Length: 102
Image (cartoon, rainbow, N blue to C red; front, side, top):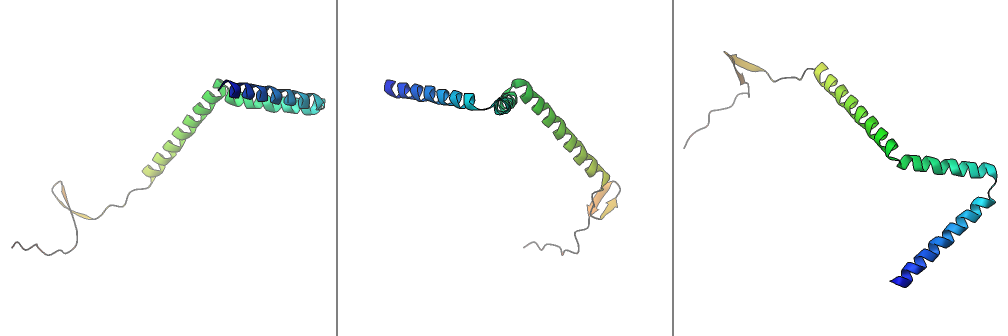
């Protein structure tokens, strides 16, 4: 277990050294672009940007819900024809024969 941890730390240290060497060999323009990409990546992970994304998603969801409700209200739902007896609606199910009781 301890030797595996030591190997992991050594590999991580070697990787960091290689990345720093590559970074130092890059020209200033490429270093700047790399730094900007790193900053954009870290900004995506920040709590403020995540909160802003959640606020935007909630607003879009509420807007979609409101549009769906408006569409539902604007088109009437076709209803089956019924016969009214006072305030009781009796639907017309067609001509159905009476059930015979045995």
